Length: 118
Ligand SMILES: [Zn+2]
Image 1 (cartoon, rainbow, N blue to C red):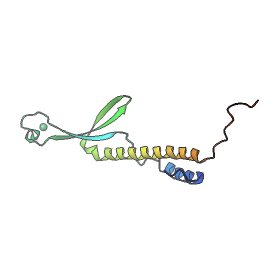
Image 2: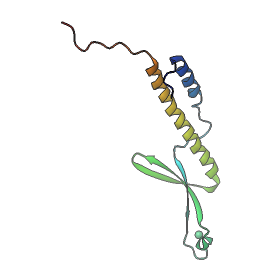
Image 3: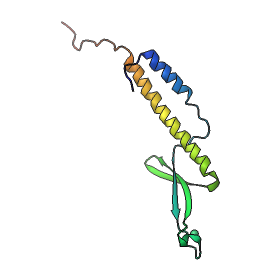
Image 4: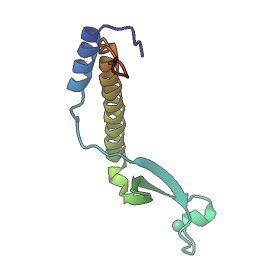
């Protein structure tokens, strides 16, 4: 990020990012994970190498990783929710960095002398 920008330029960029912070739909802060498995049923196609595909979302809850099964008909929709989550997360991070840049662009207050002269 260019730190030589003026406070007004930074403020304009920040305002435009803040306007983009509106969710365009459901928001999901999770990874969408696809996995394949064998069910073990006799004669099933998965025994001939055509494994079953299933999709889950995984996310952190405190220190624990949780996962939730995603029904097949919702997979593409849930991917959009996760994409929206990533978009907003990136934007939020950028807004915070711009707020820091705004503070840094302001002239620093003169330092007070550390010791009182006698
Ligand atoms: Zn099977």
